[in-house]
Figure 1 (cartoon, rainbow, N blue to C red):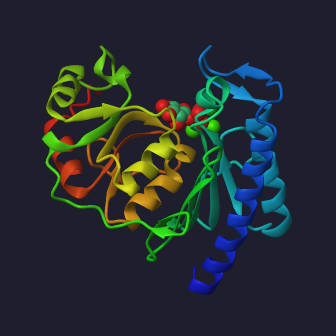
Figure 2: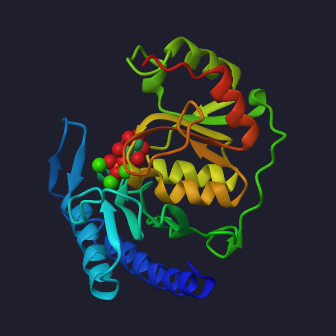
Length: 268
Ligand code: IPD
Ligand code: CA
Ligand code: CA
Ligand code: CA
C-alpha cells in the first residue's frame, strides 16, 4: 500500500472509530441485552453486534473490494490474507463492558497482503485512541510513543498475565508460569487483550503472555507493538497466524526472548 492510500484510509478509519465509540458512550447507561456464546462467561451484547454492523456497512459501502474478519458474524469468510482485510473486534473486553462499563476497546487492524498497515485501539470511555501506520511509529492520541527500552530486566518488569494460566491447565506448564510470577516485579490483568497490547506498546507494562486469542484480539495490537520496536509472536516464538487462534507473547525484544526461552513450555 502506498503512503498516500494508507493515509487516506487511516483518516477514514479514525473518523469511523471515533464515531462508533461516541455511540457506545452515549448509550452506556441504557439497558443491555446480554447473551452468552461458547460458555456462560462468554458474553455478547447488542452493542457488540451493532458496533460491528456499523463498521461492516461503512466498509462495504466505501470499500467494496476490502474483506472483513470480525468476531460477531457481520464479516466475511476470510480464508487467506490476500488483499486488504479489516480485522475488527467491535468491543474487546465485553466482560468489562458489561460489568464495569469501562476498560474496553474497539480494535481495528488493517492488513494488505498479510502486512500490517494500519492499527487503531480505542479505549472508548477514556477517549484514548492508540494508532499506528506501518513504518511511521505509534501514537497515543497525538503523542508519539517512544521506542521500547530493551534494558529492563525481568526482575524489574511488569508482565500482563491471565491468572488462569498459572493454574493447572492443558496448554502450558503451569509450574513455569508460577516461576515467572515469582520472578517478575508484578503481574497485571486488564481484561482486554487489545488494551493490554496497547499498554505494551506504550511501555507501561513490559510483556504480555496468554494462551488463546483470536485474530481480532491481536491484529491491531501487534502492529502497534511492532511500530515501537517490540515483538509479538506465538508463545514459543513462532510467527503469528492471523487466520486462526494463537498463543501470544508480546513485549520488548529482551523480555520476549527471556520469557519464551525460559518460561514457556507448551504441553502439546
Ligand atoms: C476477550 C478479551 C480478554 C481475553 C479473551 C478475549 P472479547 O475478548 O480480549 O481480555 O482474555 O480471551 O476473548 O471477547 O471481550 O472481545
Ligand atoms: Ca467475545
Ligand atoms: Ca476480543
Ligand atoms: Ca469482542
